[in-house]
Length: 538
Image 1 (cartoon, rainbow, N blue to C red):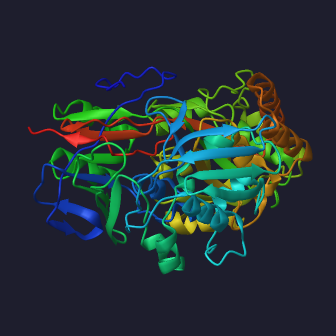
Image 2: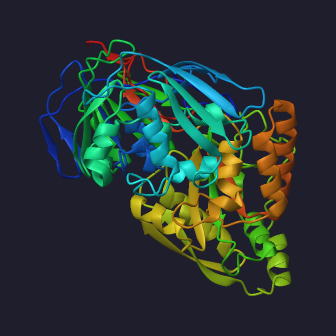
């Protein structure tokens, strides 16, 4: 863990840090502005956007997952400071030689927050809800199941409770990232009793086995969690955690400086110096485990033309973009896999910045005079795009150099994500933070043909290449890491040549926190569990 107290950052080093704190508030202003007093064991985190759903099974956005990981536990998880998979609700597991049958031994004497028993039957209930579209509790878009297991029921043949604390999962075919996939917050185990009770409204009444229980949700303002006194893991040191919505980055930092919140999330690069100069605050930069990119809808003209897509790539000066928009707290992206992933292909290079090449390609494509288009951008900042409008305007000005006239259109995050899933966009700024430490989490998610289906899509470029599909499936089934690495390196080369989208940047998400925050260790995935966090007095 490294605390950054200097604006001089060496790009390329993985920076892992810590933060989180306490508070309770008595009053708030409109828009989530916090006032008044603190309590030593209550933590307030100010963030730019609200969650969309607290049912992890139908969730895709990071702001929802940041809350969900503290309510639900998964069968397995990553160790706190690394990439090793360790027990969670499952004590141990074993697999058959062919990799098709998995048996999990579950922990005993665990209860859900509603008092019901956790056991293998509860886990089986969750899997059947996720995987079967005709299940009465399969209501909503179970996108993560589709992304990872190939539609419904997909790769899973059967899930059976062999006894109260023994669970068998049988796959239809080998799936190398299976265990790492189960670490995702989307596969947190929920209470069957509460799912049956609330069903469609379970997203607003979450019940898991995690370190914190749901207290209430004032939509657009705050979500409050309370301590789970019966948690099966470590003793929880915080009484409550408040996830408060403060849309303005400037306001979030001001509230942190005034001591009215404990953590300010999603800050901008321009605010780094200000945090560094405050002796009461610490700056935290998370690792490069994301990708921000420009999705071009390959189903819509003119972006169905590879030459047009390549022309767009030649118009974006990434070095200038990183300096002007990201204040050098990012690195230009050459590929859709972050450099810290073991299958990253360092031989892949970005299209060189050249307005002349772009104009030549547009002429060859039949657009010598350019064209008009739209660029969609989300209103609120994301971890991969801390200054969404600044980036949108940079791209607009860049494309205008080849007479591509861009109208920038903004939407709230929840509306934005639903609309691009429907493929209504031409150009859209979007990104992804890895859910587990495997290249499959990036390449299969973005470019598999199965992920082009509207409502469930994560292939926002609506790209289709049968050779890519074949290699993606082969990489998923292989067990030898070196063999898989070679496949993913080849995939990156093919995708780079097809240019279905433009990889833009890998960022280090920026957070500020009071020095009172202790025991917090962020993970690569950005989904912060708060069970070990505590606060110290001034």
